[in-house]
Length: 242
Image (cartoon, rainbow, N blue to C red; front, top):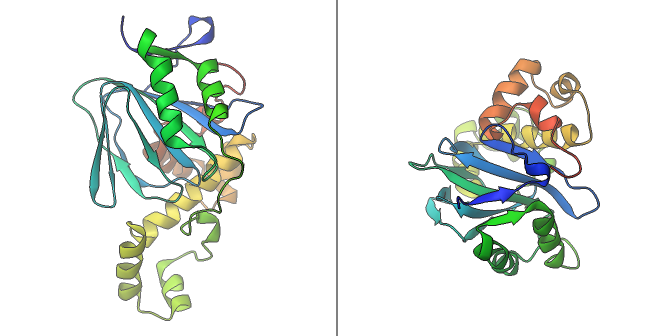
């Protein structure tokens, strides 16, 4: 039997990337990734990302190191950590679980998911949600220092002036501290804010205007490149059970 997720009603999502938001839990978002074209450029999330591979392999680059994750294995990407993922030569199926920073015990959760996955080579969404709830910790940790909510500048020149540095010196120091250029960091912060607004149902055009994109198309291009889906499709993510 092929390794897969089990969806209520026997349905499966279209496309490589699919996100949904379970109600009544501490999970910010759940996602499934399928296929080979699973590469994404450098970005970060305001949430912890817990990735668990069901079949194939996922490879991530963080801090100059390669993380190779196989079937039945997981990787934790802390909030605010710049990372990118690579395309794979064979099909992959994996879960992305997004939680508040420090809200879930990742090692224990991955062990629990292995126990769910191993007998059937699939995981029911409801079992997955229950497992995440089982391994929540009492209180979330403060946001990562690179939390996009703390960014108060619009251009690199403005940020360099605030820091009392030259533009070139600021860019070099910023990249050394945060693992990505300041322009890319700023864009990732805006995209994370767009995700938050889309989750609560704001219209795509309104989100584009509120987060500082030139128009809806500009947001769409950047959003799809960073997260694998269009803002419209992301906004239509199933809110209850898939």
